[in-house]
Structures are given as C-alpha cells and as structure tokens.
Length: 212
Image 1 (tube, rainbow, N blue to C red):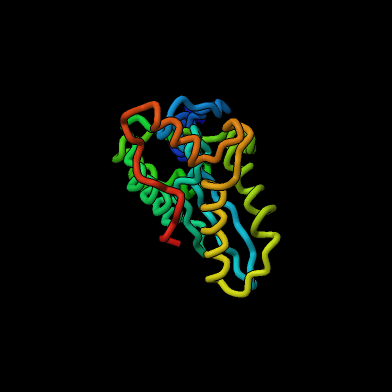
Image 2: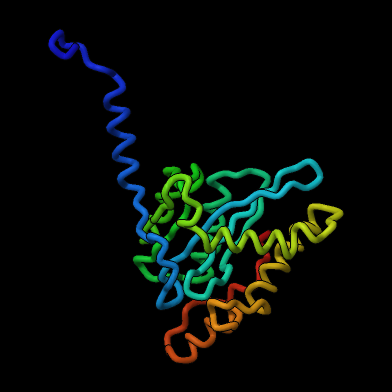
C-alpha cells in the first residue's frame, strides 16, 4: 500500500493515543506509604443511588494520614466535580510544589481542563493501570467503609439529609475513627503528631466540609 503512496489516515491517531498512554504513568506503583503530609494525594469517585437519582461522590485523601481533605457530591460525574474537589483541597492545604496526585484513568481525571489545573499548581499526576483497582486501593477502601458504615445503613429522607450524612461521616472518619495503619490514631491525631514534631504547619484544618 505504501508503495503506491497510500497511507492510513488513522496512523496519526494511533500515535497520539500511544503518546497519551505513555504520559499517564503509574508513578505511585502501589507504594501507599508517605513520609509527610501533602506529599501524595489519592482521589476517586464513587456513586450512590437515592430516590431514583445517582449521586457521585469525589474524595481526595492525603496518603500520609489517610485524612479526607476534600469531598464533593454531584449529580454529574464530570470534570467539574473532580476539579472542584481538587481546588477545595488545594486551597485548604496549600501543598508545596511537586505534590503527587494519583487517580484512575477516568475522563474526569485525564481531561485537558483538569490536567491543566494541576499543572498550574505544580502538581504531578499519576494514574492507575487500566482494570487494576488495587493501584488505588486506599480510596477503594475508604469508599467501602463509607458505604458499609454510613450510606447503606442510613434511611435518608431527602437529598439534604444525604449530603449531611456524607459530611458527618467525613468528620467522623477524620476525627473519631482510629486506623490500624496509623497505629490506631485518627487521621487528625496522626497529623497533629506530625505538626508537633515539625515546626512548619501543613495547612488549615480539613476535618469539616461546608461546601457540599
């Protein structure tokens, strides 16, 4: 075919796809240990059906303390949801340049708008491999616990009650629920211990969320 000067018009599309896949590296590589707050954030989106509507819940966790540093709820699983959640976390924590942000390959995490927002903040992105949920198991575990301990156990009567229930669970998770991986401390207590031995503060308190 090439001898007759015929070329596939899809060759460039394939090349672009391969380049994009190469850029979406798994930099975290299931290394779920972090030395300090605001070194690695992990994020994911789950859904919950209520009154014939699907609500999408986006969360960002600090890998050091497992603290839920931002959470937003929406009726659309969109870039707007993930971007809004990230900006809420960024404003609250004011992380240093070079923060690693890990997520899956969902369209709302790989969109041009979202990746540009992170790049402008000096954040490096990392992505799970396709069909490998264990690459983001910390977020998977968080959502499993949220559903088992709150969402599936509560009979909500309104959207407002649902959103309040999620916000209350985040507060409980951060300030009252001990974690085995944190030597049975809460995320808030674990970060307080870090601040105690390190004079530089890590950011504002993120245990309460008013932006639901």
